[in-house]
Amino acid sequence: MIWLKRRFYAAEFGPYQDKLGELMMAMPARYAEFLMVSTETEKPLVSDYYVGLPLAELASVFDGFGEVSEVELPREIDTFLLGDQTKEPFTSRFRFRRRR
Image (cartoon, rainbow, N blue to C red):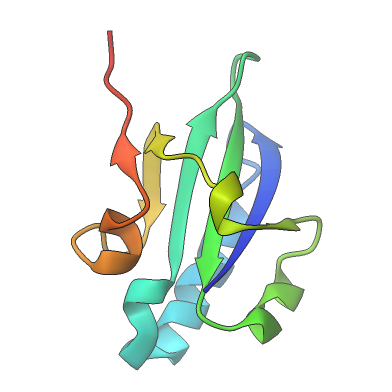
């Protein structure tokens, strides 16, 4: 898998969530490898968004995103946006942050 990251304000991530969903529908056999999660930052309404893709060639539609390695992924996330959180690509990498 390849991982991408970009910071967005409020709902600016929306068009990229739509693109990810379209790619997932076009490649249903690999649906579990399409993921989008986010973590909150210190700034209100600003979050870091992470996109998981099965193939590096698909990254070209995510302009402004930078590639990150597996070790740079957060282990705890705040929000799950797209994918299948019951399959290994998600369960082996992420858990939800506990809310206080």
